[in-house]
Length: 321
Ligand code: F6P
Image: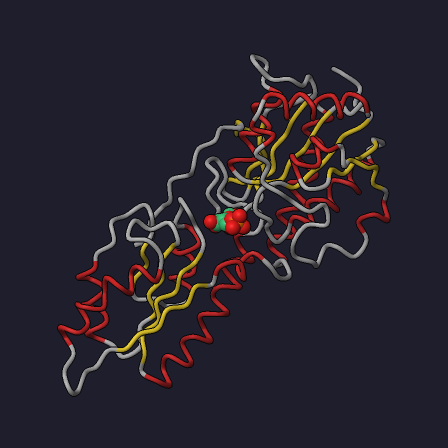
């Protein structure tokens, strides 16, 4: 097994609360294990542009409680080209970096695979993925870093909407993030007492939504941004004629739309996300030190493991009763 002297870490794709805890954990644990740790700024973009610098114990002071990522992040089109990846590989070779750990989502995993796979990869070093995305859409892990915080942020916002909805007797259609996966919407829906949750994985039942609106005065309806009807504005348009049809003098259902958007991505990470990020970071460093590559860290039934591959596949949601 190759003696590891120097590793690099980065965050990539959409930021997720807890990425800073991942950075802190990787740096501090790596240094403790006697290896040098380099940080790459702006993910694959920084890897191509050679924005790579050594990190010390003090580099990661006072970041654990902050949202975003101190290493910044980006989505890089250039890394999808062979030229971009070759440039990135030469940068790591020049710095004699032995291994790369990337915290990101499905696209970031695909980037790692194309970079270092034995068939047509361009870099010979080891690569390990750590799941960091609010969407919780990575197959092979029960949770991703950032999901817990994003759900809590959305629930807090919806509790406020419920107050004003109750005061006015209005329904709210709330759009949460989730392009391909309804995990955020489902968790938020249950925790906020929503009467309907529309997700990409199931067909949205307009009649069922109208039936629930008929029953109560101030429903919360959650829709994931990737639902097949579109987002909250599209659902509102579809619902309009149905609601007009059931309007009477006594029952005049009124609704408002709220798109939570990027608010879900920012803010202080929850304790749960910080612990998960720390444990995943140390597992990733250990994986490198024991010669592993092309693997992803995951958590299954509460156990952190390393048996997932870097495959780009959206996970299948489990729809609660
Ligand atoms: O990180 C995942 C995600 O938050 C998705 O839920 C959302 O569709 C997307 O990122 C938004 O991306 P951007 O920040 O590039 O607009």
